[in-house]
Image 1 (cartoon, one colour):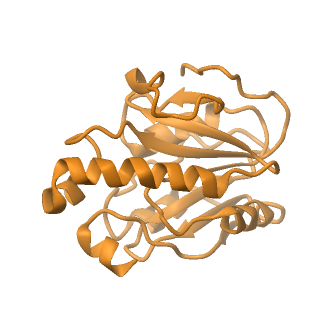
Image 2 (cartoon, one colour):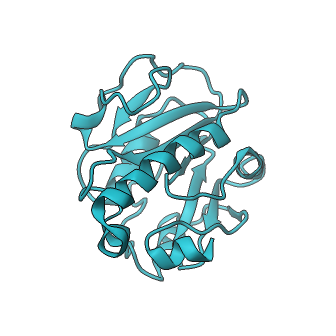
Length: 202
């Protein structure tokens, strides 16, 4: 996995990873774009990402961008002072597992970039949960989740995210099953935005 400058610090501090896509019309938020137009969906996503990054920056954790596709890592749309990694290939589970295994030791949380309601309070609560649990999940109302975190006191299981039915009502329960005997905490449920109906609900 390629890492852009500035580099990830090697200490055991907490790390928050935001999964991002390059905001090009027709390549991001395609379900939303089918309803409001590809240009409008890309515009919404680009401004949503900017708002989210402002909302979750905090000196208590290191903020890291996981960019897709890898060819977009050097795009000027990303803040220049934040380290970036390429997501690589595979489904969402393969890409998240790769991120968890590539980071230096220490607690880490991964979130999506299309959750308008997330803020520092939510992230802080997730990291606090890892004090007494092996993993933490932030549920979403559709059966998925907006956050997954791991204490990472040991290497993640090779079965992590295997058999998960992504983009379905079983994504969260399948993910929890792939965590085996890990002690899992749950934090606040938040809604992501995939459709115009999601935007109206928010």
